[in-house]
Image (cartoon, rainbow over the protein chains, first blue to last red):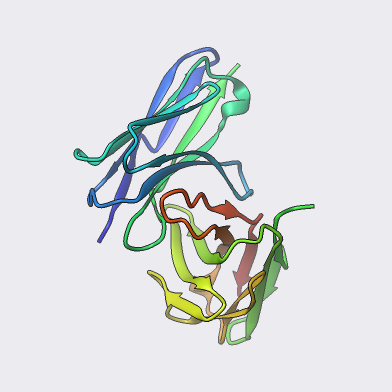
Length: 110
Length: 114
């Protein structure tokens, strides 16, 4: 059974800092890995999708990497802003639809 | 207008009542999903459907049933609601391609069972 773990569970940083969120998964037989953002009381918004054959994806200040063999992904956020404050969720797709981690709650302090 | 809509957005009900949560999408996607989110437990898959005639159980299907009335509509029912079904419920959709199937989520339904 696929299990997804996200570390840390919560993170607080000052504005402008670069930061890394971590995601690990137990079964490397995945089709893709996705990072989502969730604002309090809201639905999820897809940020980046990395196919199993890819190593990384970039969108603006966000860069996600995937090391399938070691079961790890990182989400790098450059020059963090207060508007980045949200919960970030990692999810992997394999023989079953998306399996989610519990998320990292990020607070960026102005 | 939102691509994935859920109704109702909030619902308070009593133990033993039958509840239906509805999801509609205008994205033209074949695949639809129902998840629940609980504090500390993350999102867990309840049911999913890859087309109108295909329904599959997810990780936590007990106590739930679904109906795929059309490509654009996917309903979740709680036949006899119980308090531990209090949660935030999300519907999601995706295209057929498994490698690039980004999921698009609705705004959620907050369900409270007293």
